[in-house]
Each structure stands twice: as structure tokens, then as C-alpha cells.
Length: 181
Length: 214
Image 1: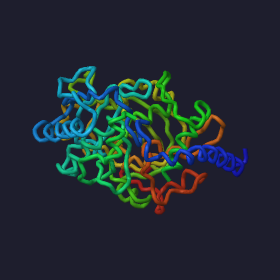
Image 2: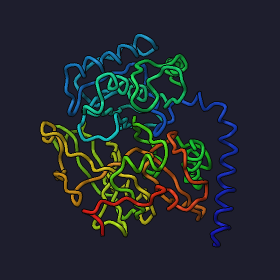
Image 3: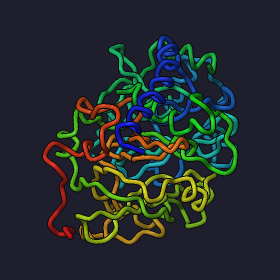
Image 4: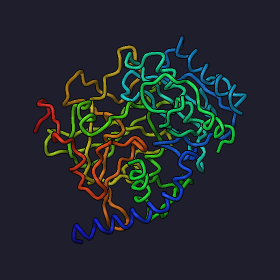
């Protein structure tokens, strides 16, 4: 097919999709749980158990990650989750690696009908990510395990990308977490 | 830009799910399912020049294979290990293959990932060498040969998720450029829709270290 025609047809296809997304764009701020690259998936329930897994340094890392879980439990409907030995039912596996180029990563390891039963969080173990920023990245990735999306607004929220130090979720994000939706 | 990428991600699955998201994970693994299994917290680059300045290798390449990559766990068969896939590219500018490390969610089989990927597709890649693990961490890595700084042996990571662009065929027979890793974090100077893949290279052109120049 002639290249120009191909491009026109691509434009038409994209245009059709654009129209549908443009309608839903009003709700972009409300999207939740759709999965990466921008979201996490919905968890199976409010009971968010976690464990220390591969490469986890312990010490202040454990203190900081536990504080993020405590914050989640104290400020949302999440409750009952606790630190446990890693097992197939654990919701969040915390890992740390010196080889990662991103500050943090979220991987859904067991996805069922849009619900993630197990997720791995890997935090960069490097001086590139000082402790204050590391706390933010922990908050960020834990937010993904709760289904939250990236955020690019100005309200303090750890779901923004990059080297910032916010360790809280904005009220809107908390509403999503409370509703798992 | 965010919309464009979301749209393009949606467009690739037109033949299967129209413009909507298919929430149900089913076998076999699809392209979309793979790339919606993981995400990153990273420092977004402002534009292509910024991304290129943070990269050691920036090239147009062809995706030729997807193979098993390193394993990060207590043992090689640790049920809670993180496993990786290597997306193998070839470029006219680079001697030897370019192996890009991406996650392999535990429920995904490498053969399934390979089948789901558009082998033969053109790509523009902004890459940095995967750092060798720190000595205290090396015992936790399996199926990984240390590069010790040798770029001919290194694995590569995307500089940021913005630096992984694929020209993907749609079921309609059309092609388009998508950035399946980066979602909302677009580049300020992203080429216009319908632009050729090569226009995603930085304004200064490809960047290839002398050690691996073909």
C-alpha cells in the first residue's frame, strides 16, 4: 500500500480511538487499577501482607517499608496486613537490587481478571537513591500494589515520578484505595 | 503525548479487543498483557536530547529474539525470584547483538513472550549498560555473566522507560510507533503521529560507543 495512504489510514484508526478516549478523558484523573505502565492492578482485598525477599537489606529499609504499610493501614480502609515469611499468599514481596536503573519497579506476578494477587516491588539499592527519596519510591510502588496510577499534578503525592520526597497519598488517591476502585 | 501513547497501545489490540482494555488474562500471553505487567518509578527525561545525553547507546535496531535472562533470587529455582527476559536486537551500527533486559513476570513463560512479540520489528532504543551487581549481591544472581565493564558483553537496560520504541504491525496491516514501557511520561519533542520510526532518534543522531561500533 502507498505510504501516504497507510499514514492516512493510521490517522483514521487513531482518530477513532482518540474520540473514544477523549470522551473518557474527563475521567482520566479517576482511572484506577488498570495496570502498568501507568497504574497498578487492584489487589484482591484490603489485607495487604508483605515479606522481605531477595536482596532486602533489612535495618532502616525494613523500618521505612513497614512505615509505608502502617501509613496505608492508618489512612485507608486497608487493615490487617502484616509482615510474614514469604509464601504464595503474600501480597507484596519487597526486594532490593544494585543493578536496577529505575528507582523502583512494580511487577504483578499473579494477575487474575484484573486483580493482582502477588506483586514484587524492587527498590534500587544505590546512593543514587538517598533514604528520603527511597521512602518516596517505597510509597510509590506500594501505591501501585494498591492499584494507584502515576500522578503528575501539584498536590503532594508520592505517585509522582522521579526524585521527590513525598511519602503520602493525596485525598483523591486515598478515596480510590478505600473503594478499591 | 500521554494520550497518543495510550491510544497507540490501544490501537495495537484493535483486532482483538477494539479500542478497549481486555482485563481478563488468558493464554496465550499477548503483547499488551506482557507490557502491562510491570512499571517503574524513574526520572523522566524532558526530551530526546535529554534522554540521549543520559544514554550510552542510542540506535535504531531490529528485534530478532526474546530469550531467557538473569534470575534474581536465593537460588535459581527460588519460587519468589525475579526473572528477566532478554530482548535481543541487531543494529547495522553495532557489532554483536544488543540484549535488553526486561522483567519476566513469574507467571509468564519465555516461549509465550517470544510468540507475543513482533520479531523483526524496527525499534529505537535509548540504553545504558546494566550495572554488574555489587559484590555482596552477586550470589543472588543466576544465569548472569558479569560484564566487568566490557560493552561487548554487557546487558542493556532502557535509560528510562521512555527509551524503548517499537514499530508494531497492527492486525489491520498498518504499522505505528509505540512506547510500551512509559505510559504517561512522554517526551516534549515526540515526533508527530505517523512519523517514521527513525524520527524518534535524538536530533544529533545515533550514539554508539567506539568499543562496539561495527
